[in-house]
Length: 143
Image (tube, rainbow, N blue to C red; front, side, top):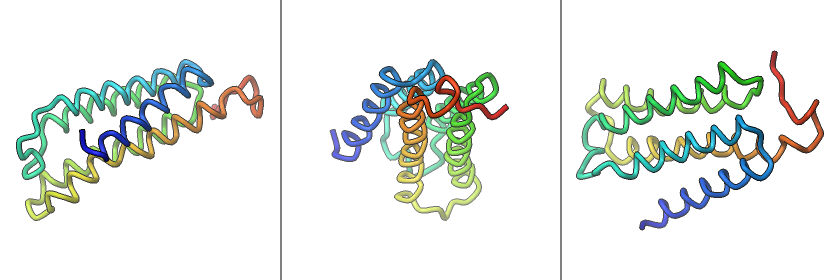
């Protein structure tokens, strides 16, 4: 396993642990959406996929977007909107690659992979902040 992949999965594992330790059901669901999206993306056969529009990764990212969007729609928490926004940026990276052939392989691959870090960060921070008592019953209400 490459070092950047091991680092990513370590951050993902820390996010899942924090979500189950301190987070509410929304954080747990978000952590699992990120987990399943990551595992399925890792299972895709790569064979030069970044040289062209990555259809399997696009579809996985679209499903992850739907998951975060569902959390945003049915939750009283605010962080799912941030996760949805970051995931949408990731999806737009794929659409740009589809539209423009001159986007280099390396930046496309890196942006597609590393866009997950801000998502994990908002889930992690929300989980750690969730039951601190700083808000009414640990909820960050936006409605």
